[in-house]
Image (cartoon, rainbow, N blue to C red):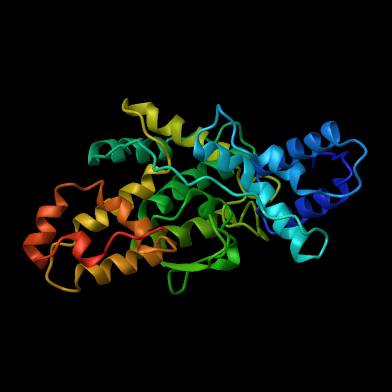
Length: 318
């Protein structure tokens, strides 16, 4: 935990501990809080109370920032102000955030050959040297990424998944710690349920009383960098095209959409189920994946006689 030195240090520290207790204090959040504290210390060394100007001058979007970068930097301060207001510590308003920009990056479209290569590389991770850490890694990595692939959950949801939230009897995940604050449930396929049961039995030999389903050597949860490093190591062992771990979630959505060519439930019903399973607050969030499957538009019109926009209209943000 960083050391804060401004007049607001005690409250920032309390908020950071509050976030950490909720398993929501990432390194990005800690950095933003530390920089905001330094801003207060440098520019308002004699201050005893927080004023709107102090917040606005630091949170204002910089000329070199795109909207999404500004949002990432300022979001922790929004949380801090909200925390202080709820406890009657300040009347300062939360800083305004710019509108989130749609990413222009097009996710990599996996083919069966690439996926087979990737999971083969995951299974080939050595358990040398013969230590608890490396033995656990060999058990965790293949199952962790297969869970992402088969369930569409976010990498952070898998990292922070607690053992008590995995119902292996009924095959349901209780996602309590996610991108937002909304809790949701994910029903698992029979094949991944069986794999998780085997994994659970194997990992208990090294972590018999673990809190997190995928534990680190000290019993905590893995950081984002761990996911990135292990995905890249396994992916580029046999594949050449650029890809990221988060694209397993994109693949899950696209594969589901591509499978909707039967005459069962309507498209809108299936979209709603997919949206809830993926933890989206609105259908608009799920609608994004539709743009990744351009050829599906023709299939949809052929089967339903309606376009996507007829079924799920564009959201008016205003």
